Length: 141
Picture (cartoon, rainbow, N blue to C red):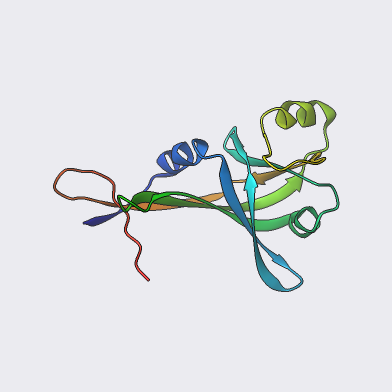
């Protein structure tokens, strides 16, 4: 097995095919992680949340991490990608309308605050079977 570092382009391509990721941020001086539905739009991560929620308040105008992975426990295959960048609230009415239609939250309720996370630093990796090039990532406890 060889550890493969993904290019930015490959990492973003993998990220674009997954509907759920995790926002990693600081809340009250402590680390916090919240799973969210998202869309990758023009190289940025877009989420919808409840206005004034703990998540919205904590990440607005902050640098956050966003982590996405796809793991198959049965075959022990998968990959992991992390993006780091500034989170900002989208306020332009035209942009709000466009982005709101691209993110489809699974949870019910008014998720009318749209937040964009710039993907300034993108890293990703997977293990590759050196004999046939199949991507394999294994996790052990």
